[in-house]
Length: 368
Image (tube, rainbow, N blue to C red; front, side):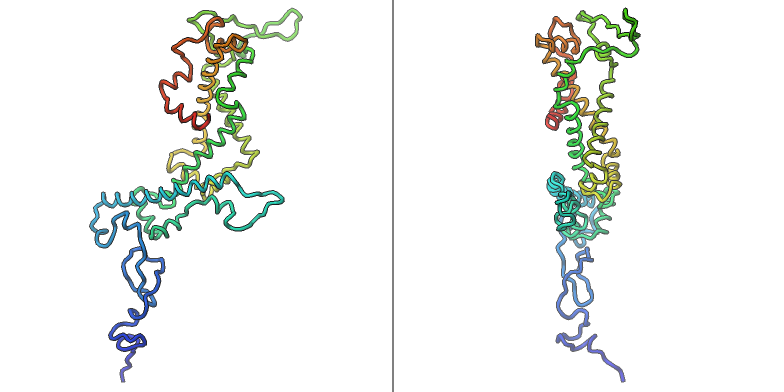
């Protein structure tokens, strides 16, 4: 006698005829594992079709996904990456706001409170998983598309967009270090005008009449309009030494502030949404081709150049005065004590105004 299973064909509990049991019954909710969007069978019923916005942006819908050329696919993936960039830019505002107000960590502070108040939660930004859910795409598919376009995984693309906050953090730290050393741009020029002239160490000492320790022999001051006083004759510095000294002072002060305020590399990486300092370094290499230390030094060198330019403008303005500051400023500026600066000016600020005015405007906006 042959056994007939009514669970496979014929009449069953749902009242359907001549259909397999797997196609009977109500449709089940999507499992979240399918990213193709095509209808398929799963245990207990047919999975409902989920919303997949990424297909509309890329044009990979149905049979069109097989007919797209390589150029058309790149255009579609580029639109998808632009959507990721837009989402990361929106979350950057909340990250910077959370960085300005860290949780209290004193005796009265509540450690390990609600998860929404954790530092990592506030500064994490958009994660790869949240973007996959919003776009209706799985992580393997998104990784495959980004690697097809730029040879980078989706997480590396997201980390690259998180790097935008690093520039603002470094500029804020360098601004604080420069203010601690030289005050606002141009204010240090007043201290330069108060200093007595110095001589380079190469000059020999001459002993005085008492036979005690000798003094530096003051060189004669130049009063010619053609041969101006050089910085080496006034401050004891050769050409370019001032920039190197200022750069070393700024980086040293920055390290001192980081030690005092706890601005560690791991803490900065976490506040920018990176999982570790190594991921921050990798993002810097992927996007800028330089390490965080190299980027920091480049910004510090620009800041020193701006401070020197602002001080040259301030010294020129002081040189028009008729007091002791004015006489000393004229000597620093490179003219005689009896004359005042005349156009065309030849100082750092004027040269930058003529050659890179946009750079000056950007530096004024950032540092004042």
